[in-house]
Amino acid sequence: MPESFKQSAVNAGAGIPATAELRLRLDQAAQAYIMQQRLIPPAPLDALKQHAAALLGQEKLDEMFLPYAVVILNNALWRPTVLKTPYRKRLLLLPQCLKSARHCTAECDTFGLLCRHCGRCVIDPLTRKAEQLGYTVLIAEGSPVVMALIQSGQVEAVVGVSCLPVLEKVFPYMEAGAVPGVAIPLLYDGCKDTAFDTDVLEAILEDCVAVEQTVGLERLRHQVRDWFCPDALREFFDADSDPTVAIAAQWLARGGKHYRPLLTAAMADACAESDAEHPPQTVRQAAVAVECFHKASLIHDDIEDDDVERYGRETLHRQYGTPIALNVGDLLIGEGYRLLVELDVSAEQKNDLLNIAAQGHRALCLGQGKELEQRRGNQTPSVPEILSIFAGKTAPAFGVALKVGAVLGGGGPALQETLDRYSQALGIAYQIRDDLLDWQSAQHRNGLSIVAVLGSQQAAHDLLADYRRRAIACLGELQSSHVKTLLRRVITKIFDKVQPMGCCDEHTPGPH
Image 1 (cartoon, rainbow, N blue to C red):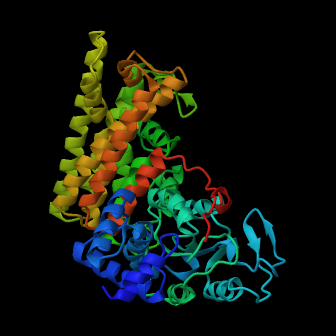
Image 2: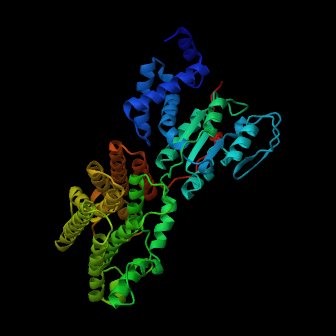
Image 3: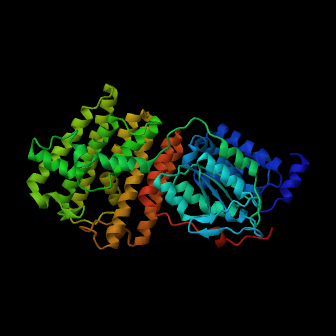
């Protein structure tokens, strides 16, 4: 390493390389590194830190630059996705500390600084350029509005400027949401009249390649919900022809979050890397089949547990009697298989879909059977036994939904194996979460409770966190950023209650 670089490293403050030349060199090294290592976003923080340490070692730079190197590596991972995101779906996030402390007269509201475009600081030309391109612009560090925009689907990528302490704080939110983002660190974080590499930001602002459709769970969620309106279901079920079919169609349209059909549609979209505004008819039909299987299992579960309420109304067996409810559940299973058989797909795909559904159906029944056997013998299960029950009761449903979507999207055998492991961890975590919610509301049933078996709610929370981590760990095997992003967002959607981010004023900056 040239002596000038060594000296720059020694003199740098707050872990930021002191010269633009050194920062450019590290940025180029990061881009080469991710190509060599074949890294795919999103990447968890622990993995990024390991790779950042390796990058610094490769470049013979001090470990004091580790937080900066993490940011640069994450930028290199996400930049291709950001550049494929339309301007109108990008957010430019600037910190208020870029304003002129002496001359700025702009006011703030709940969304951040309201720039008056006086031209006395860098905020004015940057925001003008971004808004002309179509960006959403916020001058507010750590605003909770950012997460709201991302979750609503209005924003699909973030280009931001911030100090390293705030970037470290914000990273878990971005990683949890698998949000594509590029961050330009402030050269010092004194929260007053600071500076950054404006030429880097300007280049990213204007850069845009051929637009691709990103993973939009919120967009799909609204579409999937509409698939289960009574009018939409008439395309698949002739409710006027038979009273049993009519009850089945009404049950499909009644309540629920439609997680499983959403997973089917989203996985097909992610595997195909589709730019279509709406999923194809085959995906919609398969998603309805997946929901048929799920709603059938709910009818049978409610009978076995003698539940009185579902979706805020009487359960089906309470409303119509157990014989009719059992028959409707059986019909829905048959309808699910009928819809799969009638799909306009290749014979090989159809065979794969039927095999996935049959194996999932069998695993679900065996898992439920283990729970019923425990109840019949009035036994207290061990932790491994109850986890085995949880894996059988919930994991197959997630697995079927994801794997059906993967087949329709063209995913191969390696992806199917990963989805099996992911679904098992996800299903167990999901069941533990539900058990914790039931325990906290005193609604745990029939003594089969992981909280009771473990002896405390904290132990159950720890076990939930462990299986959540296992699900995330499965993502390291994936070679598709679209699929990896989707599955990471699924975990966040189900388990994480994202709290609003604070602002940089919560940090006490060191002297610079």
